[in-house]
Amino acid sequence: MTTPSLASEYTSLDPLQVRIDTHRRFSEITDDVNQVVAEALRLGGGEYLVDIGCGTGEFLAHLMHHGHQGPLAGIDTSPAAVAAAAQVPGVDGFRGAAEDLPLADSVCDVLTARHMLYHLTDPMRALREFRRVTKPGGTVCVVVNHPRTCQRTHDLVAGIAEQYELTAPAGMINEDVNSDTVPDMMTEVFGNAAVHRMDNALIFPTPEPAIRFAESLFSFCGIASDHPQYTRIRADVEAKLGGWFHDNPGQTWRDPKGYTVTTAIRPAPSETLP
Ligand SMILES: C[S@@+](CC[C@H](N)C(=O)[O-])C[C@H]1O[C@@H](n2cnc3c(N)ncnc32)[C@H](O)[C@@H]1O
Image (cartoon, rainbow, N blue to C red):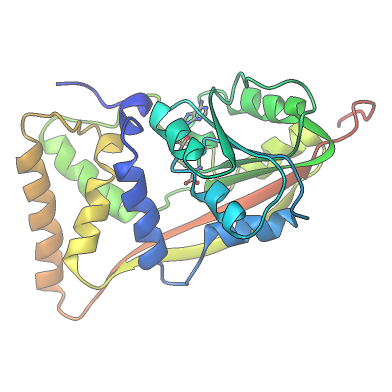
C-alpha cells in the first residue's frame, strides 16, 4: 500500500477529469473557468502563451478551438499531463516544475497557472519564476480556490478516512495559498495585481454525482487507490451520502466553493518593486 502524493494523484488524469466535469455540470451558477480566464487576459490571439500545471490541457484546447494563432505550450510535472497537452493540435508539451521552469528569460507574452499554485510548498519561488520567463509588459495569471472550497464533501471523505486511520498526506495542498493570500503574493512579486472573484457552490440533486466527486478527493484525504480496504471505504462514502439524501428527501447536497483569477503585468526590469 502506498501513501498518496502529488505524483501519484496525477499519474492518471481521471480523478482530475471527474472534478473538472463535476464543476462544469453541477455548479449552482453556470460558470466556464476557461472563458473567465480568457476574458481576464484580453488576448489578441497572437501571443505566445505558456500554461503551467496544464493538467488535461483543456485551457490550451479551449484557446485553440477559439482561434488562437500564437504559439501555445503546456508545462507540467506529470508525464500524463505533458502527453495530454501535446495531443492538442498546435500545442507543445514540456515536462518541468513551476519552481524551476525549463524556459529562458522573458520568452512568453502570457503565462497562466490555474489551480496549481496551492500544490507548491514554495509558491513565491514559482511566482518569481513566472516573472522571470514573462516578457516585460506581459501578463501572468494565477487561479486559486477560496479557502474551504468544497469543504463539506472533503470533510465527509476525511471523516471516513480517519476511521481507517488515514489522514491528509503532507505536501499535497498548501493551505496558505488561496484567494485570500494570492493577490498580496502577486503584488509583492509584480508590484501590481487585478482580481476577479467567483463565488459559487456545487449542488448535487442526486447521490451518484456527489459520490463520484467524493471519490475524486480520496487521495487528498490519504486514501490510496491501492489501499486494501478501498472498496469498503468507497462503500462507506456511498452509504453516508446515500443516507443523507434518504434522510433529506427533495433536498440538494450543497457545497460552497469559489476561485479568484489574479492577473499581474510583468514590470520592466528597470522598475523597482515596492
Ligand atoms: C488541479 S490540476 C490543474 C490542471 C489545470 N491547470 C486545470 O486548470 O484544469 C494541478 C496540475 O498541476 C500540476 N503540478 C503540480 N505541481 C506542479 C509543479 N511543481 N510544477 C508544474 N506542475 C505541477 C499537476 O501535475 C496537475 O496537472
